[in-house]
Image (tube, rainbow over all chains, first blue to last red; front, side, top):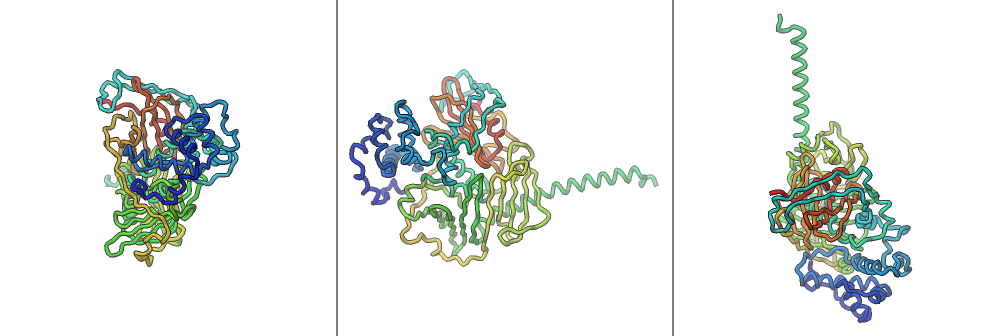
Length: 218
Length: 322
């Protein structure tokens, strides 16, 4: 991604001072997973679009430092998710009841709000985690710890069939669910799947269409 | 004339009938495979300029695709006609993403476009999983006569497909993915296509004022595959012998039967998770944690296969036994 090579738009940099230093400090703390309640409140009162851009810059810097894949997934969502995760820790800060968060931060997960078709797709898959239902257990056991370098010769799997009443969550219900921190991970997996399916199997245009129409961060 | 006794004639007729049926059933998959191979080649050998619609579940999206060979150089363009008008250009092996402006560019994730990636038809795997039928009459799609190729799943672990190919050049004009009961899950269909487009190289130059980014493909690191399946549906097998290492310690495997694909993601986790399944059109995603000795792993599977396939695959996934 060229952004790593310094091709970020100039106007992006010019916006750095739109937010006060303490807000940027809070954003940095959130990015590092060290945000306090005060940090969260400051972020909620700030311009989320600007913060998202800033967060993206942080993310790119982190990628460059850690030589991660240049594929950046759901960065704007990531900001919202981090803030929401912080809110969830604090029981005195109930989810979805703060009008600021309703109006500014997570408009695409409000239960009754109209979404774009792409948002529906994203929200649907992002909510896989929410759809979890304790329906069956699977136990894998063995005598050796599985490590990347070990030859797991004695590992034996013990599996049980899924229960008949396992819940399969349809899209319509997922739209009503709240967004979870797993959103980013699932979006990434869906994109990886679409890309690899398109590259691997010669089944025509459908995978191609999926790949091109899917990667939306909004 | 015992040779022509009624019984002898009867058995002769039965044998002829059986052999005739056998010949017919042997011929049709070959015909279908020939058409599918031709379809695959047509994407990169023909010149075309067309608009198609992609629909799945409640979503619909229109795109324009252009392709041509000029002076030994291959040009290709795919434009998302809805939303932000994102374009992906390919000039030989160079791929460029074109955005209306920098803001939109920053709002989008980088693409790994599947241009020039249509692989050979994997006939062996397809034959194991699907009955293949070539339609015996033509119809019209986007104003052109088409021949239909139907892939009927042999079991409940995969979806059915129907392709409508241009009768003359076998270009794919329509593709349906459906459940075994015939319910439509996903579709692409051309609404117009021109196989003699008057394309110039300047048609593949980003417009002035747009924001472009070259797409740099990163090859995922290949790592030893530590996992296996105790069972797979007929025709399915791992596409890569090794796993692909993604960020944050995630390993990715890919299964395919030559038509459908299932991606498997495994990563260490600290939190136990019961199985959950989510459906969206033809795509099913399943997730649960598995425990290997003292370690927990989060298993995620995503694929265009029926729910029972994902459910079952998630129960037979286990550490590899060397």
